Image (cartoon, rainbow, N blue to C red):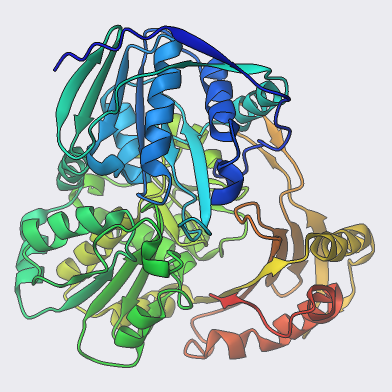
Length: 550
């Protein structure tokens, strides 16, 4: 369809540049109301398109998780992109595009990059959050060097360009031409499902799901709903209704689309307190995170990464073995033991999927993951929630056992890394930074101090030298390495929009000969109390208990 716009490029003046558009670990996230300021979104998009290489004559992928503001933002991006000489804009029906699917589309269509409209697991709606994330030509999150350049550009903008286009219809597939700009609206699900079929044996999975093997998948009224319905129910034959909350809503049904035991508590209750389902899973707002559950069994994300790595050869896309694995620093060392036995490299990176990019692009690793419910591989350059679900289903189908049996067998073979993360959300920013900086100032004096039933062997602020390009990333989290091999980590998160989020990570290894069946909060109790006493968490945050315990 050819649509004439006959629109001249306008130059919209700003009264003053915005000074707060610094992207975090996963793009720029602010409250919806903050993004609603006049020219705020337009300014950030302008900065992106001024800095992103190849815009003139290039192809750009744009989509999002369906949250409030997505449709309007897509129209804004189209107008600014047209004014910058973009040749082709690839959109998806209803603007729905999961982050993993976006990564794949960028790579498949050889685009210069993609703009993903999502605040991930943060709440949506007029009173929720909004976000804009740039992914590069490799399909992965833009590197820090590029996002820093965008931030510098945004701080000095005095205007942005805009070309008024007719409203683009997103409710159906179509091709539109607006003078020099071609706009293609595609089904955002199809290409992703083809990719999954290349990696996993759909006949094997279909046989499992069509048998008397009930599962429950919670899409949390977020982006994975259409993907999961087509994949699990329509393609693999799971009974209708296996996918819950499958219709994306602008406010996620009033929920918090974060797949953990707190915010996906209804799903957790079905699996952990009953026996009607063999398997449960949930994905977050933009589809890159996952939670895995079995009958009366919760799989810690760090253990999930280790189990997937140990069983990787069971999936057809990974039958030839792995080049290596990587985990973020706060993630437990469970996967390290698997990598050692497999004889492959294991890398420890800062938090943030972008740090896996160089390792993936240089073929140093095949699989990677984070303790924040994120796992993925070299098939794209993002973590991938449904990929992890399919991997677990493959393991269960091949090994013909339960989730709990898999976990017990894994621990009996490798030992168990008891692990827990305590999130203190919405802490007053000044109080959170005061607590954090106080502990940081004492690090050099902590070696040899008593900690729980052992002593502190090393206390530092984690830094990382990228083995591919040699770049140095510093100040990535306070670490206490204990003489008995345990670890305690404290970080301030960069993904929230209200106050500050303080995260405490506690890990303790127990060998095969030890007690492998304790409740993690009991097994880690002494360490949790010691960490609170050392850092003054309850006193410093003013909170008696964490908001979320994983």
